[in-house]
Image (cartoon, rainbow, N blue to C red; front, side, top):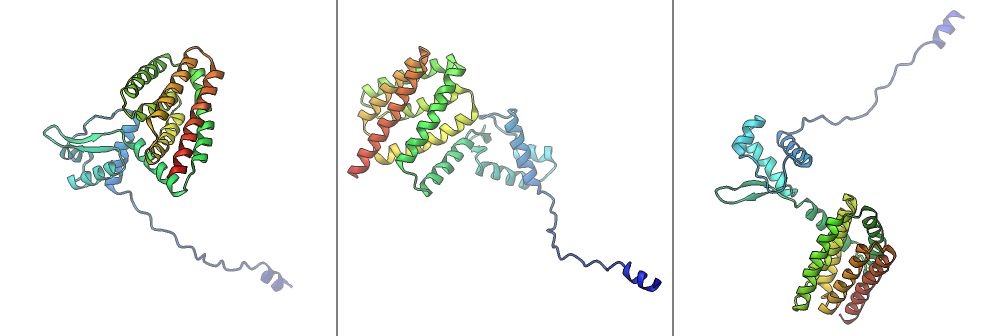
Amino acid sequence: MAGKRATDNKVSTPKKASVVFARLQAKRAFEQISAEIKRIIFSGVLKPGDILPSELHLAGQFGVSRQTVREALRRLEASGFIATQKGASGGPVVVDTILNSMNDLFLDAFLVKKVTTEELTRARLDIERIVLRNVFEVKDRAKIAQIRQILEETEKKLKQGSDEFEGNISFHKLLAEATGNHVYIILMESLMTVVAHFHSVLKIDIRTMKRACKAHLSILDAIEKDDEPRAQAEMEKDILDIYRAYKRTEETR
């Protein structure tokens, strides 16, 4: 009986698990340097236009070879954080091209998905309605004054016969900036990249551009007079007018 209990209480031998773990690798030096320079840029210590120290100086600071520094700088340039400036006072310069890189990726995604003018218009109606509502809540008078100046310059150029769609695109970007919300700013930058693409491909005529500028002046007037319902109505009319211009152009292609 005792022997039976001993057998019952016997612990079975555990089986080895057949799990394969990946070998841990220390982060390479050039990746650490790249990450550190990015951190300093994000912190605002390094700003667009600032020139980084020479390769030799950076190598001394980080305690690595110049080749390692060169590889880190190459990575930073490829990802849009710096550019190489030529000349006696040249070197690696901090640039503000990260947003441009994001915009290009955003446009590529739109093209891959074959986004239609209908989809673009619906997104614009929804996003720009929210942006405009925030403009009224924030009331950034300095930014609104800047928008007035740019719109008047755009109107003048259009009257002179210039195909000034860039000024009309800037209007929507500046409205997003007037919210003070970086998410809206990034969204609008990306959205306007797609709008600019459609404008370019479909060859939007100068009459449409003049109507857009007039609509933008009406929206701005409503903002200055604190009349949100009128501003929202004018914005919707502007976006739908551009949509109709898209459709007319598509039908004649």
